[in-house]
Image (cartoon, rainbow, N blue to C red):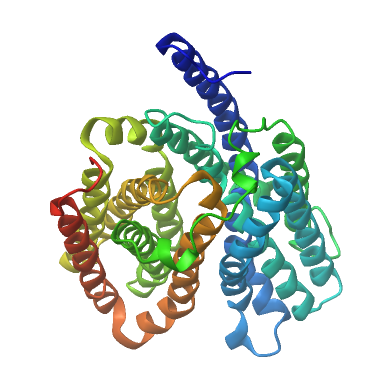
Length: 409
């Protein structure tokens, strides 16, 4: 077929491409609802199972930390696999990894093996490295105007996952009488199997063939770009600070004498705030610009720390967690849109992998360090540590906004 020779031909191709992008965004949102429930299941039960199985009780939270480590270490292999085999095959394999991880974790519980259980949660984390790239996959066929909305559509799946994950724990935790909680991990494996079916409906993007023909510029050249540095730092700060504060908040609430139920409800509202705005974040980016929305997210994260420093009542903790969730949504989605303007189609796999490795590597560090810093310095110190990274990210965004010759916001 010849190249488009008129505006109408180009418009038709853009319309056709966005039709594929909308289809894929819906498929990926459904896959996110299923696969995104895995972390909620591991976080809910990992510490309890670890406490029951570990001979050294100080290692009780290791399964949860290994979930985040598996996510960080899996980003690059996942990207390499999808570059070779394509998105659809890669995501089917990724869901198979999630299925295997859930089954192994359940077997570890049934056989009273802490090592096997930890290996299972690590593998489930590796499955998460595929899920996290759904937001990028949604933009593969999208026009520039639709890309922010495509990302937002996928992120709404996380809102559903925040319901499916806890409900799976409630419905299945006692399904295997001889091995408490093993049923919940079999439930997680079942959700991964359903996700495998869902992602098989993905349609190939028009650029997918061209994107595998050449490697493009060297990665070091791309990541040294000011625009990539600003995008990566914004995403890293948004996600790692959210994890850092979210992990510490329930422990701090209980330490301040609040009931466990109040802490759980605070996390529930936090998750709703994380994913609820996704229904309109893309439109906000289209109207106000990605840099402004990203900066707004960072300011909200800082504001959540200010509220956290102002008191220790239940209301203070809840408001802190809600603002933290809103800030993460604007900051992370905005940073994702910033990243996709840093690479050419043939460079997307390695750049997306490098970005996510930096982000989720920092998330793993935040997960490992949050509890220890809370124990050493208290909830107040956790909040004070939020401000330096936020200030650095805001300065970079402001500098980038004022640099001559940059792309429009």
